[in-house]
Every structure is written in structure tokens, then in C-alpha cells.
Length: 192
Image (cartoon, rainbow, N blue to C red; front, side, top):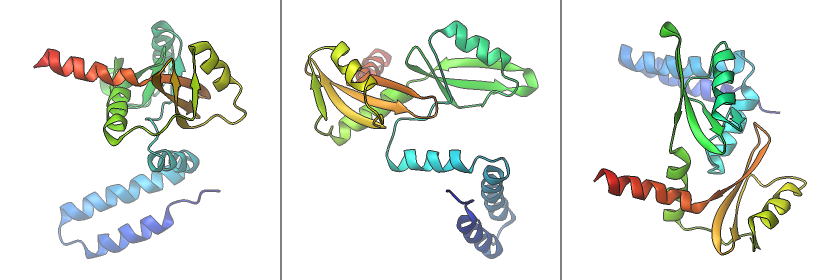
């Protein structure tokens, strides 16, 4: 069971006492308040899961998933306080939530965070695949029958690398082709 980050608060408190400027004290107080907020709002488990995903170098977390843009827009409109800057998946693609409460402005904007993530993985060197399949259907059947889905592993389908991800917060199993990272290169070349 995760515990509130008391040790981090203690360390930040010590640094706060040693801080020499009001600006430094304010930044440290902000960090302390953020950790207290996590604990006070019952988000300790979510915070722990977030830290675990960072340690595992997992794809960015998502807070919701939708099959269509219309369903995502309806959810965004009906949500009293949308989670600003959080990611959602729409038809398997990442979007970021933009919410300005003062203007009641809400938008879902397509975001290339997964493409950046995949490009970084390619640059670091892809590990050997854990399984190889001839067709997407074979790979999907394998993924659907995993009793405990892998958080992230690589497979190949017809010779092409795919990242298999279990988005645990939304209970979604998905396969992302590594070729998605090529979208960034094409966009960079077009922008040049």
C-alpha cells in the first residue's frame, strides 16, 4: 500500500528552512503543497502508479479512451472539471485536454506524444520482440488472451515492430506500430 510522500515532504521542509530567498521558499512551498494535495485528495495510488510508469519508461498515461471524436467531445462537454493537460485516446490516437475554466473553453487537441515516445525508443534501440505473428489478427488474439496483460512489450507482425501496451487506468490493450514515429520525421521534413 503506497504511503503519502512524507519523506519527500520532510526533505523539502528542510530545504525550505535553508532557503535564502523568498522566491526559492515559494517554489519549495509549491512542491510541498503539490505533495500534500496528492495525499489530501486521495490520489496517492494514482501518484504511485504514475511514478511506476515513469520508472518503467511506459507510454504516457491516459485518463479516458473513446472510439469516436463525437463520444470524446460529449464526454468533455459533460465533465464538470476536465483534467487540464491530461491525455485521452480517441480511436487509438493521443489527444490532450485543454480547459480554461474562466472562459469555459474546452478542447481536445491531437498530440504527437506517442510519436515522440516511439522515436525515443527507436533511438535508444528496440529490444528483441517477445512474440512474432504473421497477421494482425493473430497478434490481437494473443493480446486478448493474456491473463495479465503486459504493460509494454514489443512484438512483430509480418516483420514490422509493434509496441504492445496495456493502459491500465482505462483497461485497454493496444498495439502501436513503430512506424508511427515516422510521422514526426515526415512532419519535420515538411516543416523545413
